[in-house]
Structures are given as C-alpha cells and as structure tokens.
Image 1 (cartoon, rainbow, N blue to C red):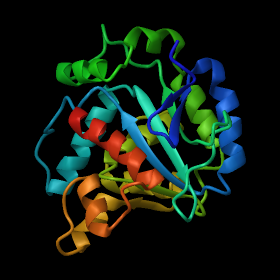
Image 2: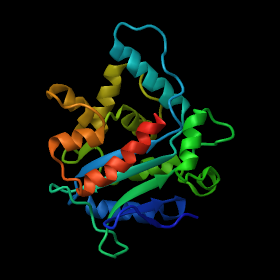
Image 3: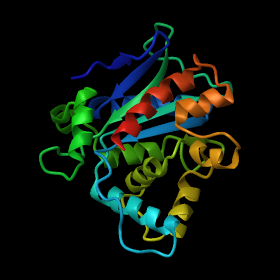
Length: 248
C-alpha cells in the first residue's frame, strides 16, 4: 500500500486516505475545520469523454448538459482537499515533523478494465503514479466518503468557504457523491443543490472574468495577484491544478 504520507515539499505532506483509515482521518478533519474554514478541492477523474450533447438555447445550458452527462458516466479516482485559515496557513500534520498537511482520498469506484474513460487520461494518471489495482483493492467506497463528508462540518454550513478554480466538475462529482444521485437535469436545479451543500462557494476562474487583465491558469492568476510563491496554498494547489488541467 502507498505510504500514509507523501512529502510534496519541505513544508507540506499529503495524508493518503484509504478505506482502512477513512474514519480516523475524518475524525481529524472534524477537529480542525472550525479553525481552518476555507476549503480548496481537486477531483481527479478519467478525463472528459463527452464533449457536446445535443442543441440548446444557450452555451451555458450546453455546457451544463455536457458536465452532467460526463459526471453521470464517469467515476471519481481521487479527491484532494486542502483546509486553510484566514492567513492561508494549512493545518499541522498530526504526524509531526513540523509539516503542514492536505488530505488525498483514493476511491475504489473506477475499474480501469471495464469503465468508460479517456485512454490518454488513464495513461497520464498512470504516469503520475496512480495504481488502479490498488485503488480497487484498498480504495474508499464513495458512499462512505459521502456520509463522512456530510457529517464533517465542512458542508451545509455557510461559515465554511469552498474554493475552486474552474471547478464545475469538482463540485458536480462531490454533489453526486453527497446525494447518492445523478445531477439534476437543469442548471437551475443544479445551483439549488450547490447552494444547499456549498452555501459559500467561490470559483476563482469565474471571478477573473470581472477583472481587467486577469486571465490564464491558476499559477498565472496567482502571480498577477501577487500571491507569494512560497504560499502553502499556492504551492499545493498549483501542483494539483497542473495535474488536473492535463487530465482535462
């Protein structure tokens, strides 16, 4: 089995969460969420396989139906969640060593031999060290993850701020896991669900639309905003986002 933690810098470790330590790790999350009420999320899945679905009145409706169809067809592989406080600091790792930490949850839902996927995305994930056999044997049941996230104090609470970057798929997959149902048929119903489970949600990519000369990927936007290169959050999120953008 993979190491319980992976050091991704001299300051940050990833706490690898599998079925056997899922309850233990969520117990830690319940302890820190009040002090670290800002939550960034990254969901890895096996690529976008449907790129256009039918004809719609608006591009927004078309984009939503594409998202809805892909979320219905695909399975989540890993979910990485980063908690941070008002100053942008991550929680200290319970393992000690003076490190900050983030959580990576490995799910068992995806069967690489049977489920629909983008082959290029699968190979990319393999190249990043994803062991699909280990996922099936040791991974988390999505229903267990959803139940524990529901009771963690991180959702259904407007004092907890969720932050994404172009995060429609991230939120879509989380909603499917939390509700145990497929996404609604319409955008309006989708946003009603978002408002229930993630009442305070910011999509930084969307916010850049309203800012002059602020465009590009996460790292570029952070640089334009003057976020320090050694920021805990930027360091971790930029690494994850580069991975996720390549998958998409």
